[in-house]
Image: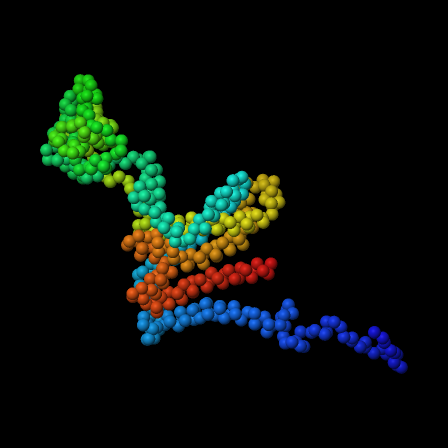
Length: 467
């Protein structure tokens, strides 16, 4: 660049020279360009197929569902907001809304908490990777298969349902089930009804005389597996007649195949093990005992002259476990199956976030005297807050659409107690009595419930991007 001096000594401004940047200024030629230098028209051309698919598969169905929700069952008559009013007056839909609220509050929170616990506890053990693999494995199972598995797990019969087999096993360990339901005496037996489901002897008993307590009404197949043949009390407790004690035998007065005699202990008849026998005088219990494996029992001398009573507890139904799929527990039970599948998902995401936590912060806190609980609560959890938010929001959106487990696991009349919006949408919109207007209204309600969660997630992502 050269400059010249005019006569008055003033120097004119330099003449700008064309440079490489000026030859390709945006907007000069080839149309508007994006910040990356790509033509916006070209970018729109590449995006057009995706936009068409998005409109056909997402936008159009949403718009049509909103439009269809304002028409009646046939679709020919405008119904206004009648379909939306019916959502909050129909008992089945109200149950679905209530259950969805329970799902949204409980399932994501518990799954995230379990994932956090698993991720933190398995970080320091050598077999942590194997444990994580086992916990994550249910994610490879479809919802349909998981529903079938847990329908078997929650079977009421302990011989088939794993959950009740465990519950009954624990219960019987601390409180053995020895009941003989439907057991009762015959008119020829020396027992009679004593009120409240109990049975008492017709006459007072005396020491030195064997007391017979026969019962019938228990099928041999329902008897305990370790039931022994009944024996006479005097044969097993020799000399007891001389010390004032009262002895006797309780047994099932039934001979398989026939041939037995009433009030006689036949060789093939089984003992009633574990029966509680009470001696009652003047309305008060003066002595209590329990029959042995051979049906025999012994009462102290205080029982002499008393009536013997078999309390009603002897004839209660054996403990049969928990009714997992009953009206009260069906929703928590299904949430349990969901946690079995998705706790592993939460654990993997949280473990990935935990791996990025600066170790020097944790070590510094420990050096300063912080305990493990303080480190976890004041350092680990705050640093994992973004990851926990991602897991929570993802699971909340997921449970709003829960369908498979709720459709498969409940049985019979309890299906209505476990109803959710997605299942109600399916049942309303399909079948012989389909109502597409009401079904579209449920779909719109689901959309409105999902939108706030999505907005929270979008705001969180934008906040993370600005950082």
